[in-house]
Length: 409
Image (cartoon, rainbow, N blue to C red):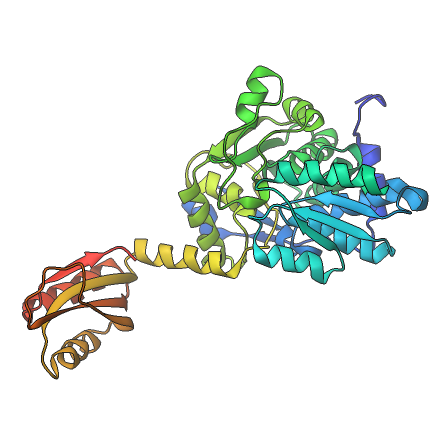
């Protein structure tokens, strides 16, 4: 790599040094369960445990260092879906700098609150990150603030590259890396760092179907926007690649794959149940690529999966977990009819309890169903031990004279 390149190993090392003392070296966690499932040696780079909950702090600190005191005198500003805004707010507070963050109105409330709690002035503008970015740029020019782009900036990219330096040190037999791709800053920096040090290591980017502009952009050689960026992986919901990151990803990454929403949801639950790690959708796309077969682990050596963030809304996490329970047969909804007379519901609940099912919710349904005047319908939400147990409960209820229908929870 020549010195004319916008980002090189020297710049990445300097950016890593600028974040020393604030940026954590996040742990690498082995996952035997995931390895057995996909067939390979898998290591999880738990960047969800980074300060502010994502890798973004690395780039924010690098940019502030590059701007210097004079460049940051008026304060800094960003447009962000959440993680970049949190990181810049944290970095600015650590350096004693004023900070503003423009976020889309669709941003998770938890991320909006986190930015405000870190001292940033938060403004909700637009539906997408692109709209928030445009508004932040205009505000920067108007008020004399330093605009910090979330990904299409050499200093930010260099800062994210520090994660690649850590991976090479932490995993001696590193053979393949799966990295989430939103705007491409993390993937670019990681790939440059790793491949400059060890060119044989493969770096594969991962996007989510509902926000995947890179495949078409790489094919055409220019940034191509996608129509929609509404996805469970909101942290990488970028509609259009940057000019700089598109060029770097085209040069440095071995491939970019795309995963469906359902696989991302499953990956989040797998990480929660098996690795005991809370990971947001954007951070889970690498695991989704493995479990869905969109990317394979290396035949020899270790495949590292970068878990880029853990800032997931608690309501979304609960919904994902509940959906998984239903798909696994551990949560079932039964609809049945009862005679509308005293004691009938009690007898049904006793029967279900004796069968070992946990009753989560009971609801009478008297509208929208063709019922006799002396009948009532009851909807039961049950927790079971799995599909076989759920079927056993349903069959026993029917054998006791209650016609049932299974609903989706």
